[in-house]
Amino acid sequence: MIKERLISLDVFRGFTILLMTIVNNPGSWATVYPPLLHSDWNGCTPTDLVFPFFIFIMGVAVSFAMPTKNFDSTTFNKIMVRSLRMFCLGVFFNFFGKIQLFGLEGIPLLIGRLIITIGVGYALMGSFNSKVKTYLAVAIFAIYLFLAYSGIEAYQDVRLPGVLQRIGIVYFIISLLYLKTTQKTQLIVTSTILLGYWAIMTLIPVPEIGLANLEKGTNLASWIDSILLKDHVWAVTKTWDPEGILSTIPAIASGIIGLLIGQLLNRPLPKLEIAKRMGITGMSLIILTLLWSIVFPLNKSLWTSSFVLYTSGLAILSLTLFYYVIDIANYKNGQSYFLFGA
Image 1 (cartoon, rainbow, N blue to C red):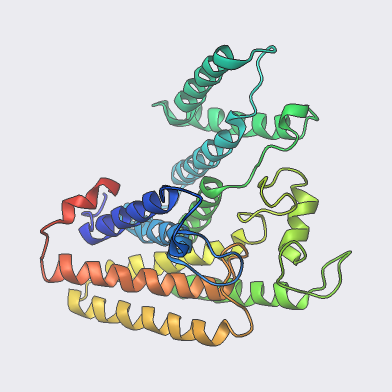
Image 2 (tube, rainbow, N blue to C red; image 1 turned 90 degrees about the horizontal axis):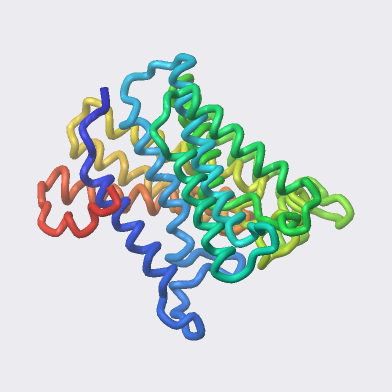
């Protein structure tokens, strides 16, 4: 049974989508207000909050989507297929502009690409039985990998990581953690990820480069991307990816923090008490960020541990505000403007 929707979470999601729309369409890209741009490297702008907010919201939503922890092969298969579908959709967006068909060009090529898009979309999002859904998702994923590493010139530099891909991976892991572990274990996993990532990035020397560092293109995460992904990274960065392999690990911690807050919201406590605990947690994470960022700076591209704590703290405080206004004070005028994201 699915628990009743939390309206404040839907409004927070809608607010985040609104922010995403603004930063993706700032007007003239030649003159963009600095807050509507990502940080060049270290730091955090409002634009940098969009992606971690989505991952946090997804973590909160998991506990509402599965209030009863019933883990079996059917549940595992549903989680895996949903994750693969998100991953495959994200990769297809990267493949779209690379598709070549029998030497076609211009409008005929565009029509061919759109037909393939409809086919892939139906295969991934269509209503099939669970077995067919699994076969289709796995098959499409395998085709992507084959094309990417087949040596075919058109696909030799297609990007494999991405936003939806990272969301799919995080969803898969936090869903399993939610169903199979206690909140104490989830907290331990989060702490281990954040401390372990800090140690890996700041203590392990970078092969072929030298000492551990947090600079563009020379850090350990960049080196791993260049070795495992090769040319299949973001075209702008060329040798590493902002949604790369190693930096996806701390993104899991962002999702788990959302998961923990979701479980707090589901506890049989007075709503005002829940809001107080959320507020204290959010402020505590931001204070901890101020200390940790001295040695491990805020950085979205590396998704540093301090970035996880800072963005999660702001997400918690934002949700706390919406929760107090909508679910406690019962002030719901204007909420419909943000519910398009529900």
